[in-house]
Image (cartoon, rainbow, N blue to C red; front, side, top):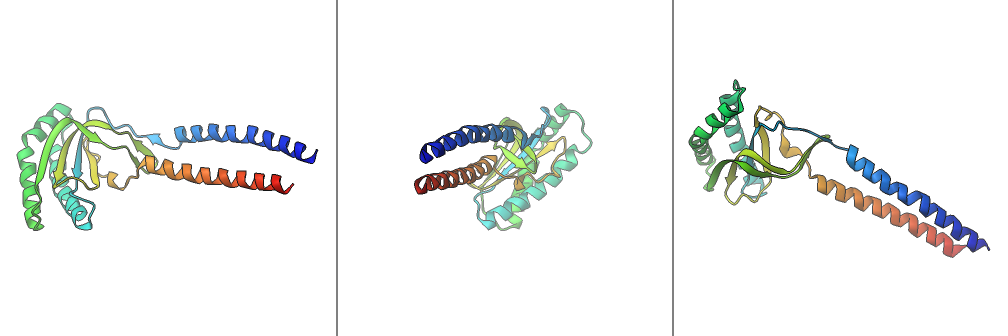
Amino acid sequence: MKKLVFFAFIFFLFFFTFPNIGVSEQSNSDSEYDVEVIPDEAIRLRILANSDSEEDQELKRVVRDQVNEEITEWVAHITDIDEARELIESRIPKIEAIIEDTLQEENADNDFDVEYGSNVSFPMKLYGPYLYPAGEYEAVLITIGEGQGENWWCVLFPPLCFLDFESGTSVAAEETDETEEEEAEEAEVKFFLFEWFDWS
C-alpha cells in the first residue's frame, strides 16, 4: 500500500512538473534575446581569416582596421544607399590595394579576394542581448587565404562598425550548453526519485 501511494505521488509530480519545464523553455527561448534589426538598406563588411591560428587572426584584425578606417571615411557623410553603393563598388580596386599593401607590410604572402554583392552569407550572431539573424546580405566580403578562420563583420552603411560583432557568441552553442545542463538536472531528479522508490 505504501508503494502504491508513493507511485501515485511520483506520477502527479512528473505530470505537473515536467510539462511546465517545456513551457518555460519555450518562453525563455522567445524572450531571452532581442532581435536587433539592421536596416534593410544596409551595406556590411565581412572579413574571413585564413585560419583560427593567432597569427592569421591578428592579420585579419590588421586588415580590418585599415579597410574599415578607409571605407568609414568614404561614407561618413552619405545618407543615400544608392550613392553609398556606387561609391563602394567603384572603389573595390582601392580596397584591394589597401589589403595588398597591408599584407606586404605584415610580411604575409596570403592570397586574398574581395567581392561586393547582395547575397553574402552571414552566420547568426549574439552580441550582448541582441540576436543578429543569419542570412544573405549586401556586403563587401574580404577572404584572406583559405578563409577558414573566424570572421569579423560590421555594418558599413549606415555606419555601425563601432560594434565589434566578432565578440558575439553562437546562439546554437549557448542553447546546446543550456540543454545539456537541464538534461543533467532532470536526470539527477529522476535518479533520486527512483532511488527513493527502491529504498521504500
